[in-house]
Amino acid sequence: MALTIAAVLVPFAAMAESVFLKDGSIVEGTVLNETKDELTLETSAGLKMQVPAKLILRKAASDEYKKRVFLYIKNGKEIEGHIVHRGNGLLLVRKDLQKPDELRIAKEEVLEISATRKDAAPKVYTPQYAAQISLIPLRSGSFLLGTDWLGVSFCFLKTGSLVVPLSLVMANMSFGGNTSDSPGESSSSSSDLLQNKTYKTLVFASLGAWVVFTAADALYSY
Image 1 (cartoon, rainbow, N blue to C red):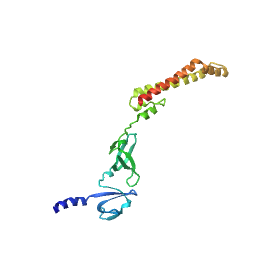
Image 2: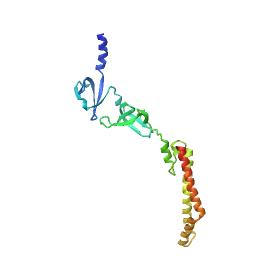
Image 3: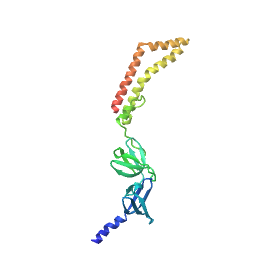
Image 4: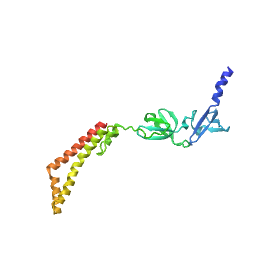
């Protein structure tokens, strides 16, 4: 019976732990004694240390935290650092092991944890973000969803519906000025165009088309 107890206690006594202090430093050694006021441990060099309990942040029995990893987050960010604690749905990550600064990252926000850096961090866009991108004439939320042909179509239609009326005004000002000997006549020609009912109809139709195409892009992206 005594031999059995000794066989169990010896490995436990030899188990080294890492003690994280609140100042960011980490002390490694074998815990010899622990009370509510202090912890006594022996380092690998044989040095005994008494660490006040009020200075201790946490203890770790495993040295997994020493491994530098790459975390890929759903928002597209890449975080390089050391996972010093896992629990309560959170990962605590230190970019520098010897500094107390720790990032709190929800486990559900992590796509992948890798020992090596990937060529490109995977990106996951929310439907809301894709819909917001769709409001920009030269961009489309469809691109973010991987449907390139739809994105090209939406970009072409949205941009075209805004460019058409602007192009007509610029063309009229340019050609009107070249065909007239008088600056006043050119200005009058441009003014006539602005008062033209057909032109107004075209402008409103183009703007209406932009609203329709933008709404279609946003709804599809969402």
